[in-house]
Image (cartoon, each protein chain N blue to C red):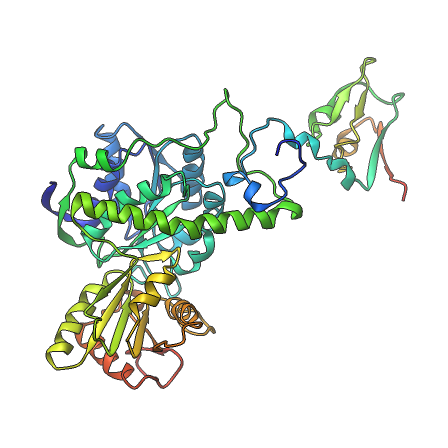
Length: 388
Length: 97
């Protein structure tokens, strides 16, 4: 059942893609994703996977090449970060509109300016509405597992959508972690060969990426939305199957010590682990703290969230990105909106944390829980720990 | 679905808006956009074919006599043929109404 290895997480994500026997990798390097790009290139060069590595001149080209290669029926992987993701943004909705199951590994990094190469979620948040399935990994193991799951979810004939796997830059990408790397045979059993819905082939003509005039554009968008909304069933199914085969459980919203929780933190990504330790510490002090970790950002898991918040008095939602001039961070406004129709909903407060690689320690999460316990903060959203 | 000009409901949309019938774009008559149409004066035409080469819509064709004409179902009236015709054999004239 796999092999326990110590491996840098960025390298491990490329290894996971190799286990999926990708056909094409079209990648442009950018910190902190570069090790993914380099290692994918190594894997292809060493002949470990029968694949092409496309050297492209930009991220816009990387995604465009990925779309082209996926349209021919090739299992396609790419990876990027920060400015690179923003540069791709023009093409991202086209990948989803064309229903191409590209898998993109994102090393989440702050967006300039000021120029900053460190970790937060301000790159992926503006990409929220591009029609991609969005997974958030908490540790190296989840990065590996989710990369493999991403191909299976995206390629499912009921889904046919691109999937991005988010891993925090540096906090995950550059950490050497203990990871159980699945065997090739196990992955082959979980992930069958990709059978595309249609491919660009001269023998069977098909037009992809066609014009949609006002008479049809709205219907096209509705059909894409329904595909994304319905994909949650397949995500749940794939995660259940993963658990049955590999023994590791995945849920769209993962609860930690919330059964009798009074105040619960909400995190996405690697900070979940620090927050868990903070919850344990608070519990030792007699504070009924809990934690919700969101693993599936798109499609948003409304049902799971509603179930998970039952009985909780205050939710302290953390955001690692700003929505300048808006109602609060993107995760916060999403959760508040999701619970609006619920009659017995918790009070919801918002902390903007961990911007541009700022460390958030266990003590910070403990302090946030204490502040949140009042059910209201000094401002609608608080930049936690900001000097001044 | 192939009988209709476009799918009626969102449920009828093919995944990815894929179109499985080749050449269906030819049914869209871009000529309806036109404000000006090209008129060839064959006495000035030297049959060089530049209008045929430059037409971005590929709607200029050669006639049996070796002169050129535009398929007005598709000609958008961009005027590139008239611009490129160095003997000055093509004039752009306003469409009526």
